[in-house]
Amino acid sequence: MNKTSRIFVWTVLLVMLSFVSFGSTQAATKEFKDVSKNHPNYEAIQYLQDQGFIGGYPDDTFRPQEQISRKHVAKLLDQALKLPQATTAVTYYDVPKNHPYYSSIMKLTAAGIFSGGMDGYFNPEAPITRIQMAKVLDIAFDLYMTKQNSFYDVYIEHWGYTHANALKASGVSSGYPDGEFKPNEPVTRAHYAQFLYASIKVKEARPATDKVTKGKAWDLVNRRTFELEKTMRDARMYQWGYSDITSTLRMSATKAFVDGNLKGYYNPKCEDCYVNVLPFINNEPLVRFEFTQPDSNTLNVNTVEFQNGYSVGGFVAYQFKKQDNKWKMNSLQYTKVGTKNFQLTINEAKKVLEAEFITYGHKNIVAKYVTTTQQIELDPVTDAKYTFDQYTFNLDSDYGRFKVKFNSSDGFTSFVN
Image 1 (cartoon, rainbow, N blue to C red):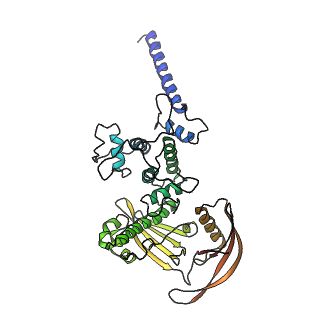
Image 2 (image 1 turned 135 degrees about the vertical axis):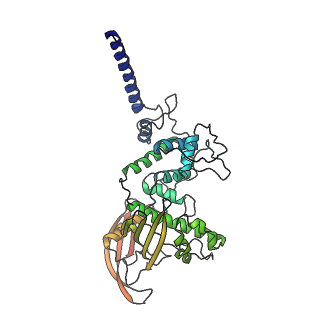
Image 3 (image 1 turned 90 degrees about the vertical axis):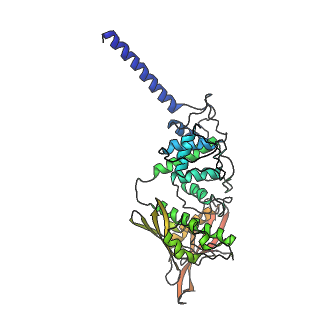
């Protein structure tokens, strides 16, 4: 190659490199005409664009207020999760192999993140609702359900209860100012960008470890208990026998537990179908929560349940076993409060009260300790008398001042007139 030829080749290479660099810079700094820098979802939209997940429309718009379809949600999740190719395919009547989103939809279906309807259709063009979005993000990013009763309109009987609570607990969605989640509203492109961005950041912030963290342990205590409870509650409504629900129960609990001690919690009579028979854990792990992982497939958790009108309060010991790559409840032991009780401190009571009132919608809540008095109760088993401290607090919030009493023995809270 002569000198002139070498100069020509290097000139061409430099020009090509300059175009590559320019293109990369443009992709990272491109602004959408309809998403200004003061748009509430600007950061999320720009992040997804920088990652190459979204590109907008040819006219340089993003169209943030348009509804996002199920096929586009599948595509974005596929890009974010980098899922492996599906080895088995599910037949959707409306997603043939030549469908442009076939691969993404199959990957997410194989991973158990997405599913179609009972009629065999996926409905790729349909908008995704907020509760459907909560489900796919909860499963896709393994969000932790460390809160209960987060939204007024996603009640405990709602199929998406765990998913909405997981989004709230993980900081992915705080819902609306009125305390509602509005589960049936369609999701806009801007809002989905925000939800996906927040989910990605939650995953990135987690410690890189194979060990179970407190968040995951707390999630299992809430989620598996709820799943078992709901199955038994639904069965009581229809007065089904225990054998009718064992296969469903085994999705959340081991065969040994389903065939053993769990039977004792099931009463087919619908005396009060909505009463919890398993421990209901809410803010208790903020002050009393221990967990150990003796091996990769076993998790032991010790916490408490406060007296709540249905439960008298007690110590709770769970064991979870990992089977088929899923944590399942393997045992549950409950010991009622008595001469052995929680002995919660003033600071623990303060933490619980503030967290509890936040769940009621209070803001700027501050619990101020007032005084301590001695109370006497009887042990439910031995009838032995025991004394415990009862704390009085003033709680100030944007709703005014409230005076409450808090039992150190069982966490029971009562208002003072």
